[in-house]
Image (cartoon, rainbow, N blue to C red; front, top):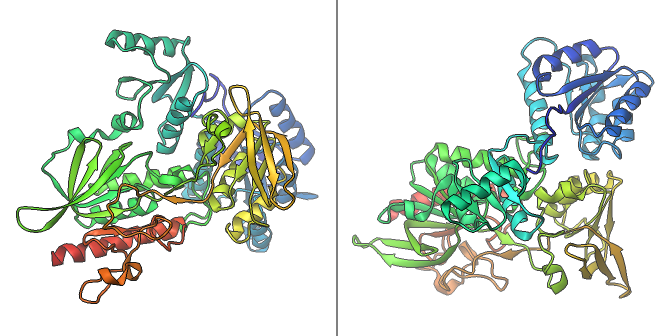
Length: 565
C-alpha cells in the first residue's frame, strides 16, 4: 500500500455545518476521534480557509462531511467548488431527516455525476449503526486508495522502481494485504537483507518480509500466494475434488461459495491475485446490493472469505498448464488438471479464467511496463501519478473506472478510444461520471503509435485515425485496457472454442458433438463434466454481475451431473 502516513499524523475529517454542527461533531467525534482529527467550519469562507491551510501543510483529508443547507449555499455547490482541489477526500452530504424527501432528486443527480460520494440522514439518536457502517466503508476505501495504510503486516524492500516491484505491490493491493515499502538502507530494509544473508540467499529486489516471518528475494506470484494458501505440494495427491475451479474472478468465486456451501469439495486455482480483472477495479457502482459502490479488491476479498468459511480451498499464483481426461478405477470419468509439476484430480472442472488484455505491440512501450506503463487498472500505481499527465487506452467499464480513480491523483487523464464515443462500450453511469470530472477528457479516433522515456515513460506519440496526423504528448502514465482475449490456451482441443478462442457451451457447441441429438447443458462444454462461466464463455455479457450469476448457476449443473454419473 505504499508508504502510509507519516508518524503521528492523523488524517482529517472536516465537518462543514451550521444548524446541526454540534450534533454532527458529537456523533463523529464519539466514533472516530481516536484515529482522525475532527475539524469544522460553520460558513463557506471558514471552510475555504480551513481547507486551504490543510492543503498548504500537506495534511491528508480523508472526508468532508457537509450539511445539506449552509445558509446561502448548498452542499452540492460546496462540493462543486472543492472537487478540483480535494480530489481524494470522500465527499458526504448530511441531511436532516425532515429535508430528505425534498432533496433526493438533486442528490441523485450529484451522485450520478460523481460530485459526491454518498449522502446520509443525520443520526436521530444513539447507535445509528447504518449511518456508521456507511461512514466506515468510505473511510476504509479512502485509506486503501489514498495509500494511508500505516500497518505493515508485510514489508516490501525496494531499491528503486522496476516491473518486479510493481508486480509485488499490485499483488498485495489486489489481495487486500496491508503492506509498506521501505528503501534498502532503512532499518526494516537492513533487517530483511540481514535475514536473507543468514539464509545464504543473495539479495534480489524486491525483498518481501512476510506476515509469517519468512523473507523472500524477488518472489514469484506462487511464492507470494504460498504465504497465505500454501502450495500444491502441501495437498494430498490422491484427493479427488467434486469441483475444481480454474480462475478466481467473479464467476469462479461465486461457484466456490455456492459449491462449498452445498457440500461439494471445492478447490480454486488462480495464476494471479484472487479477483481477476474485477479485483483491479477501483470502484464498481452498479453491483447489486452496494449502493455506495464497492472496490473490486473488497468484493473479491469478501467473496474469498465467504468461500473459505464454507470449506473451499485456494491455490494462488499457480498457473494451470493442461487439462487431461482420465478414467478412474470405478469407471467414472476424472479430470486431471496440471498445476506446474503437480496434478489435481476432480470429478468436474469449471473454466472461469476470464480474459486478458491485448498487448499494445509497441516495443518501446513494452520495455517500460512497470515503469509508467501498466496493463489493467494497476490501482497500486495511481498514487504515483500525482500532478502528472496520464493516458488510459480502452472504452470499456474497466477503462472508465480506472480513469475516474486516476483523476483523484493525476493533473489530467485522457481516455483514448478508436470509436467516435464511449456510448457503445461503456455503462451510462460511468459516462456521466466521466463527463462530470473536469480532469478527464475523452479523445476519440485515436491510438498510441509510439512512446518512450529515459528509464520510465515520459512521452507518447498519438495518431488520429481519421487524418493520420501524429502528435507527441507528455505522459507519465499509460494504462492499457485493450479489449479482451480469452485466457484458455491450456485447454485441450476437445473443449470447443469459437473463432476468437472463447469457450463454446450449450447450444453453441457444434451439433456434431451433441449426444443423442441433445446439446450440452447451458453452461456445459463439449466435454462432459467440464463447465464454463464468465467472460471466457463465448457470448458472455462481460459484466461482473453476469459472471457472478453464471458461476452460481454452474453449481446446480454440477450437482445434476454428479448425480447422473
